[in-house]
Image (cartoon, rainbow, N blue to C red):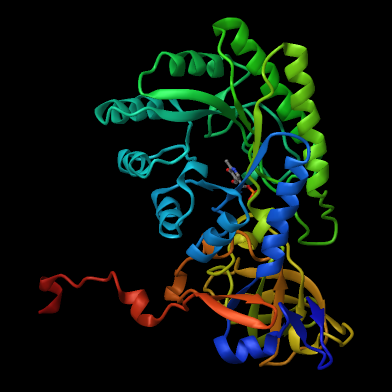
Length: 431
Ligand code: PLP
């Protein structure tokens, strides 16, 4: 990304004003080189230090083109629903590298995963273990599984995105002995082959010590399992959650520090406990697609309350990015057609939805803005599209992939016909 000679923001070698002209706004833009480079950085960092697989968490951004790029970069794929799995299969993702997560997989989703022959089911609870076993036995099939463990690690992040602590809807709790019972149950369960353990301590985590601590606890648990049952694991999946830069104050580490925090810990613990060194799996989502994405909006109305605040409204909002409304996520932005101009005022960016909470950014420094200007919001590649909605019956934006001056549509803009597609008027209402 750079500011070009016209004073406009440029991404993937294209002036964003040209993107706006060709594709309209709101527009999600993904920089292909950025996405691919992020895949490579994680892969290289981990594989340099031992046996490791980087699995892209597709909940952060999933569509067929994105899945294809992750596959081409040699990553595995984390899916959490039939829809994400279907997308991966349609994209031709190598099934043996698909990891299926989720705390309430339906019988249909499990059957679909087995039918496809996916690599790993990450079993979250006793209900799922039994269900999976029944479906496997009925098909005379054995599925490789990991068990999701809740290690009791407090990651330093927002309350709603902490998942490794004890009071969590996910996984088998480690400190109270439930995890050991789950391992024993899995070993006695027909139709499943227990190859590893999984944990995920939260998202937008900056403190590499939290990952190290989780890795250490999980290895200790592998040692405990060996003592009690004799069972040895070949995989340890430490989840995702690697933090990225959104706003001033965010200080992301680099993938090498993540690898350096967990790989030696796992290797040393394995030696100490006299158990095999498991293959380490990590599942970054946000850190791969987040920084590679920007969102372009057209500025419309403004409202100034003297001495209080100036609201500047855009043609999107919580429907294409719910994160600020959901958990006060913070973003930075510039006026793309005035990218070379100095800031002159502090404004707040309001979405167009009928909710007071639909505020995209509170207090951002911008040059003086006018209707028709284009706002570019940074680091929106993750959890924007995948958490989007049709609230207020707003059609979802389009998404383009840019690379070396080329822009390709990878997601069509929804139309009003799309909004109505599933509406049905019963005969009695037609009278
Ligand atoms: N793995 C699991 C099990 C998750 O629950 C999540 C996010 O919720 C991720 C990976 C990806 O997290 P992030 O996008 O923060 O890297």
